Image (tube, rainbow, N blue to C red; front, side, top):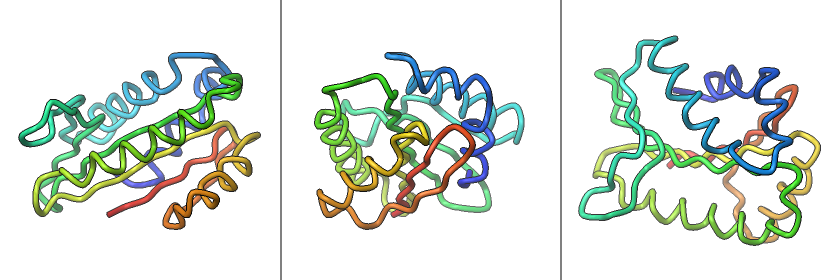
Length: 149
């Protein structure tokens, strides 16, 4: 999986509608990425796989014979979740900490997806928290921030 796979999912009318909703956007995105990668690209993808020795679960784990497994944590913020921004940012930090517990040799990917209209605000919030490693890619409907480690 790479950023183009994420863009293929978020650059759709369904994503454009759901990113404006008050709920369900993140769950839809996780399921739709799973569907796209499993059916469209014939990749081996597991949802909600437990981290080794933990009750915490990873959103997606993508296995490949060509590369080490990729553990992916996803956060998606709908435009109408007013007053929820700080909690959302805290949850990004928690996901990044969870990725530290991925198996040795595995790769980690933190994905943060927001409607394009609030992409600049998220960028400023990430900078304020000194989270400088995120790259931003815009699509028609969403800004996708991604950090690989």
